[in-house]
Amino acid sequence: MTLAIIVAVLIFLGLTGFRIAQQYERALVFRFGRYMGTKGPGLFWIIPLGIEKAVKVDMRVFTDGVEQQEAMTLDNVPVKANAVIWYRVVKPDLAVIEVQNVRNAVIQVALTTLRNAIGQHSLDDVLKEREKIAALLKQRVDQVTEGWGVEVQNVEMKNVEIPPTMQRAMAQEAEALREKRARIIKAEAEHDAALKLREAADEIMKTPASLELRRMQMLTEIGAEQNTMTVIMMPSEFVEAARALSEKK
Image 1 (cartoon, rainbow, N blue to C red):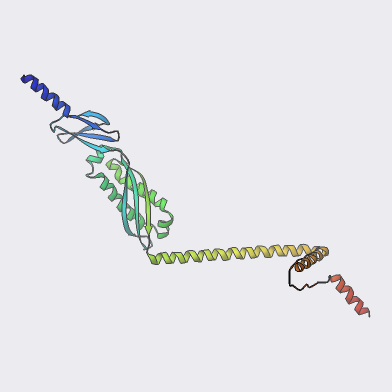
Image 2 (image 1 turned 45 degrees about the horizontal axis):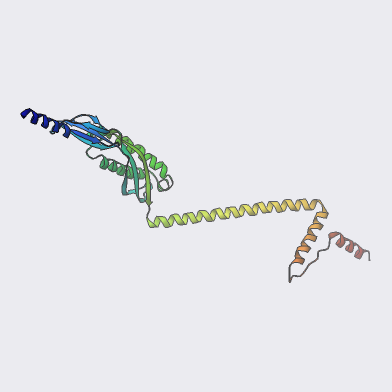
């Protein structure tokens, strides 16, 4: 009877030592506080009665927002920016042993790195080179978190806010640039038109018949208009012939 009870107790204790780790989890086994190894995914067994303890680590990708930070750009313009970071644990033993709260630690590193990166770039770079700055953030954060067994997959800057006075100044600058481009385009068009007119005039002057045809075309265009007075231009040959006759008289 006593043996049966002992066997039953041993079986019960043995069953209480079974643990299950999901496919996306890994379990770190500690024996009397000392790290013994990593188990999972699936069913595994630890020594019960507090001799061994299993700490589960989520291996999925985490997405955390980096709260808005106010920083000064390289050209002394105050801006506010926030970001989003994607990362995952690749070495669960380091993520548990080397840092107390791995998620909070990653966010704090990203927060500090974001503020420092903005301070190393001008306002134009922060607004125009966001992808380049995001890649720099990813590289710097990944260098720090590598020792914690964390891999940073991506970092994206969400919003960049600038002071209202700076927004008005940038709008005026953009309007001035648009006006400048419009004037340049208009001047180039007038220049091209003048060149074409000169080429046409040179071509017409080569043959007098072309000049007379152009005059007849102009008369046709004037006659097509309503309520207009038609002015007829005599060919230069007629004018010269009339002048010669008047001189003979």
